[in-house]
Image (tube, rainbow, N blue to C red):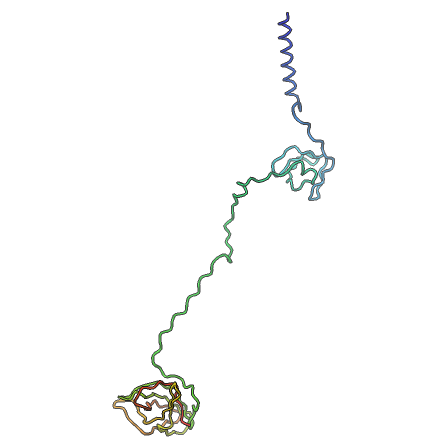
Length: 230
């Protein structure tokens, strides 16, 4: 008889335990009371609102307006404190994908091409930089050192006549200066050719030019300039 009562009590205890576990809310906290008017941070108002799901950065709310999914940033402060946003883990913070969108400012400009080096100029006549550049309407256009036979102190001079009258010039009308300041007066005029012609004077034609060699010394000159004699 005692054994029969024990088995009966154990059976009823199992039934009561199963009923307790299956009963709604038997082992869970009661659902939060709905909020009559829940004003969101963006100005909207939900009526009889209850949070029914927490989804990390957002929540699902059942309200008179229906089921609404809201970002936690839109919740009022009092309700947001009950549903804090998840804190990103250090690993997640390090995995940042940067879109490939290069800016024109980040692209290195192409280097400008360097100017080509100019070839060394040949021994061309130099423009006159000295004083006394006009003599009877004639101008010394250019000059350059040029030896004649065994005389190294000679200069080729180009003279232009801008007048309508021929002009006679003599060797003494032309002087050269050296870098040390020494002056040398012309001795002879040589017209280059085959054979060359040595003259004591020459004629510059009207509106024309002559290209003569003036001899100054037999030694080489450190030429600085050529000009008309004063």
